[in-house]
Image 1 (tube, rainbow, N blue to C red):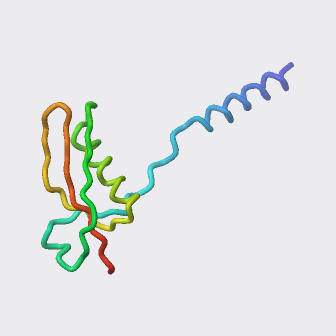
Image 2: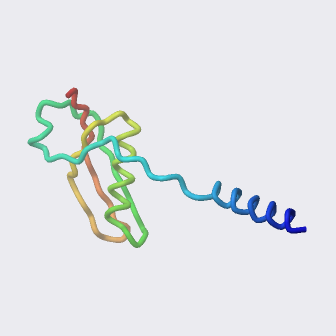
Length: 97
């Protein structure tokens, strides 16, 4: 009986650990100012939008993720609109370091 209960508890613990959100990887795109990317190629304009509590951070994260997916190395923020919803606009650069 004890062995069955212990096995059940271990199984529940194991299955619940699979449902946890994976750790967030560090971003591969760097925030920069326009004077820092003068030697780089600008190749995309991205936008981020958020309607949640952490508006600005979430909108920036959305735009940065788009830049990463496009293969950008740097992002320069152009515009921030703190209205409802919060919006950001940025240029994505590819810098050969």
